[in-house]
Image (cartoon, rainbow, N blue to C red; front, side, top):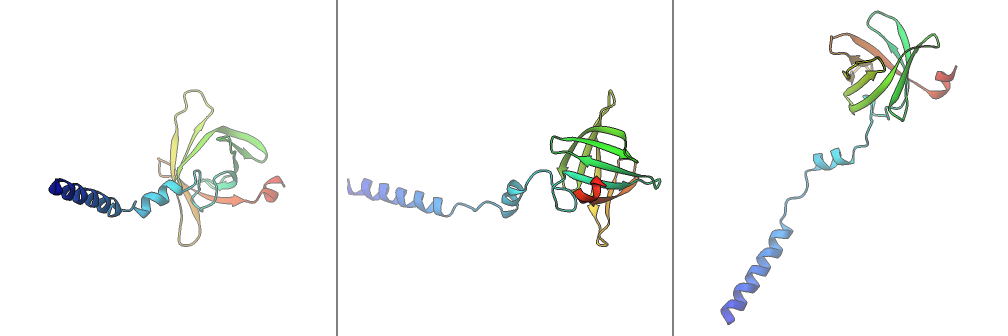
Amino acid sequence: MKKIMLVAAMVGIAACSQADNAPAPDATEEAAEAAPANIAADGLPSEGTYKVTLADGSVQMEELKADGTYVATVDGKVVESGTWEQKAPETYCYTTDEEGAEQVCNAESVGADGVWTSTNPDGETATVERVEAEAAAE
């Protein structure tokens, strides 16, 4: 009987020790889980207004709305609309409202020089600038 109690006590102690020695969650995993959704390449929320200078030099304004839709304008006229998704700070995806349109994802980054670029799957690169709400309304 004493041996059974001794073995049971040792098993109990071993079980407690194993729980105390359980590996801590990986800090990277915790950071990924805690990272807020829809963070753009510049580290700020994706929603907002942007001045986008396309590869051909033309400029359009894009407004990314909190409901997941966007509108692109040139000189105040809508030239494109659709839905957007920020899969990661370096991956911005959009789908135009055109019938049969498929999602397109651009690779985005902010270089050491502070220039934010967005490169589409065809390799065309646009420069992106976040526009403050007051400036966008002008």
